[in-house]
Image 1 (cartoon, helix red, strand yellow):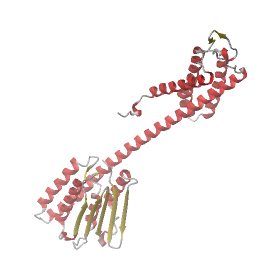
Image 2 (cartoon, rainbow, N blue to C red):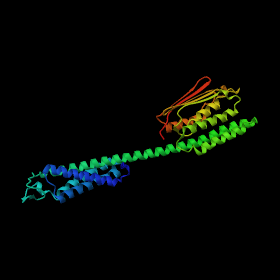
Image 3 (cartoon, rainbow, N blue to C red):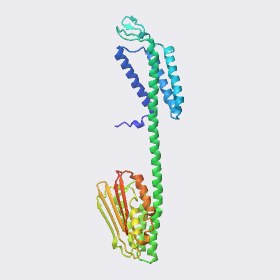
Image 4 (cartoon, one colour):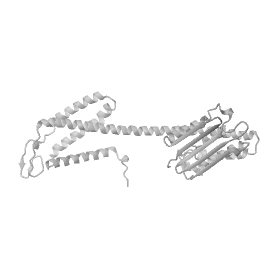
Length: 355
């Protein structure tokens, strides 16, 4: 069973870390002197150093350093380091065994060992050592706090960015649905205006499209086959309003046993039908979808009517899908749009995500 360190409370990590520090200190002392330190003196000094650590970690760094009060932080830190030297020399009991050796039987006062002689440490080094220890404690505690704050800020930043993307995608989808419905109703209106027998079939097809949009479009992923079926129904609806639909070609190749974000391809196809018919009713639209492993390629080309050249050839739909692709596939898609004298071409290459 894997341990998820992210779920471990921070205080547990702190306790374990100090236990490791304590263990390393004891091992180091024993390896140097072949003895364990005097219990009370060692506990006093270790406790004092822990207090200094958390004064800096929990108070000085959050209140001063993170608020860019650097000069005040340096001054207070220097005062605390000086105060720690005073406390160490005058308050905390000194290790007398470093100054003198008293052997009583098999024990030495201050050390539980056998026949051990430890050279005394000169008094003049105690103040610099304590000052250095306090400085290192402040440096380490500040570094740890800054790293934790950076990690927390990055996590919050990522969360905010995720919420922002989700909100933008929801807005884009909400914008896309009325846009699609408006175009589809225009197609049905065109049929009804001609009193075409195909109007009933168009309404049934539209109901299938709307069912997909209501029940599938809010999902994060849908089967690629369902998305292709949705596109086929849309093309069928558009073909009903055309005088001659023989110029519409739609081909699909490859393994469709994949997943894709819903309504990701339809805008390019909508755009082709919107601008792919000239004033004489002639239509020339080519749509090809290929799937090769996890790579999906969509190619759409359509004739551009002279009457439509003043338009941007994209409208809401194309701009909408550009925004969605930038949010969903920032580094895993390429989109090429070419507009020539009378031809508009789109190629989208998309690396499908693993859902």
